[in-house]
Image (cartoon, rainbow, N blue to C red):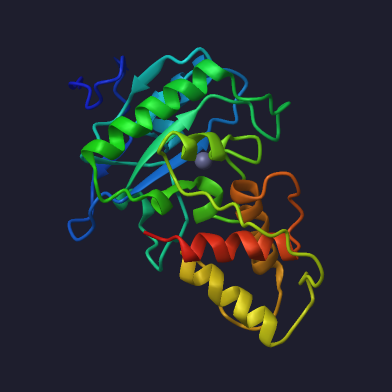
Length: 251
Ligand SMILES: [Zn+2]
């Protein structure tokens, strides 16, 4: 069943079949960005329209900047899967999902073309304008809400450029902190303090005092979004400084 596009951006409507009603107690307050991880945009569009895929998204953005809306924003699209942010696991009910055409880490993970990013920025700005509960720190990567399980849109996605255009959160600490770091296998109070900071920011993580695989995955996901030049799952001084800066500047 076709519908009228929600966005004022230039957009083609191609309805998906996989969607439902949003849980009534949740309001739209997250914008979740993905890459498609498929060989082409047309293959992704075809897949996202198939019932058998079990997935869908609100918008698909091609490499050349074309935008397709597939699910009305008021409906619950199926893009986040098993996930958690700020203790809420029904991410789909509180989010709008944008799939960005890119073959991803299992492909050759090309750079995101300028035309595509320009369209993503305009679309995000339009969505945020109409959904004011989407504050900067709630513009998220799929990897942020599903660390370890998901890696999209990945460390090549230009989050800083989005921030400079008024979309999303970014932290550039003034001092580059050197020295101590925490990594897989470490235990103790500093690990618990680090975990508490990630939980405060929104990540779904247990404060156990043990730098376990889930903590590693969380740090890895954080770096893919906020400290993209070195993504290794090790909480070094610079990573912690960025996290501090982000917490200090929460809306
Ligand atoms: Zn995704």
